[in-house]
Amino acid sequence: MVLAPACLFYAFVCLSPWYICGTLLLRASNWPSLVLTWCAAAMSGSVLFTGAAMLAAVALGALRPLSNVLPPLFGMGMLLYLLSAGLHYAALSIETARTAERRSAEARALAREAELQALRLQINPHFLFNSLHSIAALATMDGARAREMCVRLADFLRSSLGFGGRESIPLSEELALARSYLEVEQVRFGERLRVEAEVEPGCEGCAVPALLLQPLVENAVKHGIAGLVEGGSIRLQAVRRGAAVAITVENGFDPETPAPRSLGTGLTHVRRRLQVRYGEDATFDAGPQDGVYRVSLRFPCESPIVSSSLA
Image (cartoon, rainbow, N blue to C red; front, side):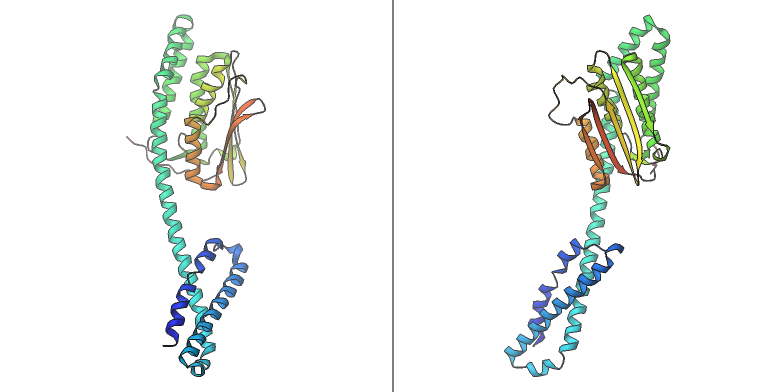
């Protein structure tokens, strides 16, 4: 009878570890602070438990029998508090696993959406019209260049369609697709479009979401080089930054053209995919800097996850 109200009170006290577990994660680097924090918290909780038991004993006139079991009662209070902390950590682990699973499912859904969007861009009537118009014009002036553009356009479409159901590909393959697209545009723009690439060998094997760079180079050509009478350069750079890979896409643009109020659909989509897959470990920045329009990506370098292609 004496312990019943104390146990009921202590049940509410044992809910407090939830807040501590949320801020003090189970990591090897945190062990000293973990031990000190939980020992202090368990002792404080046990003091409340024994104090509640003593108050109940005073109210019921059973203080003397309770005084004989105070040390074991104090130890039991500490054990119960630490057990509650362990259960809270287990609950947080389950919640984290479920969140990671939901994030993975959303990343897969966005990858499929990106694939469909890329396919729509590839068969975009405006893009194909410009390409076919350039081929028709070149056919009467320079048959060799017309044939070259046909071949490069076919190679680009074949490469992009080949990604199929692959969610992640090596950065080297993603860069190859970007170069393939730019080669098609180079035939159309001629000397107005110049491409520079700087890729460190150490980052070519890093996994990237399939079709991640396609919207970036598309944006660089459409909103940058196409608006310059004398043309300009598009620069691709990929370097390692410790355990991360940093990718930069730069292009010239007309400074007199009004800056857009927000990111375009393609850039917004790329940023969202990075956030869903890597969370706070990824960064995305885009905007005019030092006379060029620069898009910078940074995300962890992971091993490629290659899925079987769809037939």
